[in-house]
Length: 156
Ligand SMILES: [Zn+2]
Image (cartoon, rainbow, N blue to C red; front, top):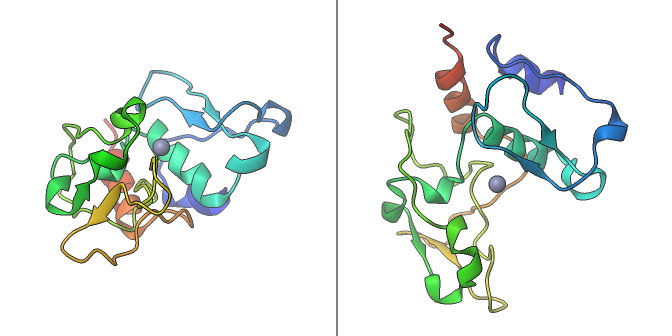
């Protein structure tokens, strides 16, 4: 947590909760909701570095990378393999991309088989090079960090 904390700035204060409060699913509400904001990380399954950072990034206001406004230049969404009840996860958003490039290595990018209805069928295919790696959960990418700094590095 300390390493992550040092990458952030005075505008974003992270309060550590008692481990006993770390129950429920992995979730976070999107963006500034005002005051304190709860981030839930279930003990088993969510408390891996990258998943924590993924949820934290939602709390900081970031959407999934593959829903970026300009995503159609970088990925193809294969709607035919996506369960219609999960379409919202792939719907394009009007995003402020903060003058940063589309980032396949973002911790906010889904993997290529996310929500697939057919085993082995990709729901997200990078273009033009379909072999590019997507969906890592090792931790924040350089661009993820750059965006947080751009959005929060300057306080009113
Ligand atoms: Zn997410």
